[in-house]
Length: 178
Image (tube, rainbow, N blue to C red; front, side, top):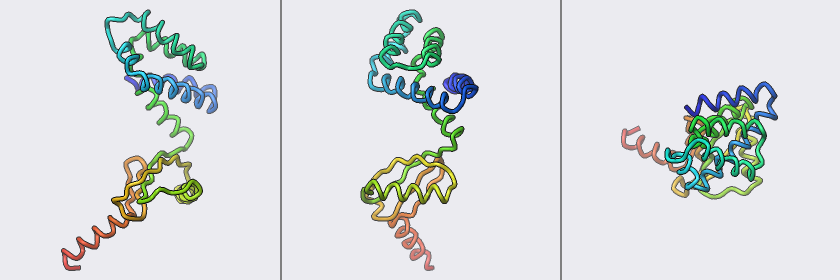
């Protein structure tokens, strides 16, 4: 269900251009963050005891504080009327993935054994972008268990160039007598 709503909002924004798409995405992310930070608010939106009008009143107050665009406000009112406000975090995630695809952005994670300094992170990111030919948004993580090297996860793909993986391969080769 979230996919359907995200696609509808995305289609509306696409008619107005990439800047508008990004604005909608930021607004949805902000609202999803509000719901994530306030689980009690999410429980209200999921609770069938509250009417659509009551939920609409609550979301109106939240929207007033968030300062979102009119299209996203109307979209949230539609979600309230259809009793789908609880799906807002999922809708925001689907929308964000569509926006990344439209903008040519690939999200991933780069894990190292020790924390990389900011300039080193940028250098690694730039190198990976030049190799892939796409814009990357990377989350940098640290896992001392890999001992050295890097592990890059992009979508379903994993490139394990860690020292731990190389040692494991050597161990397997020795076991097989190679």
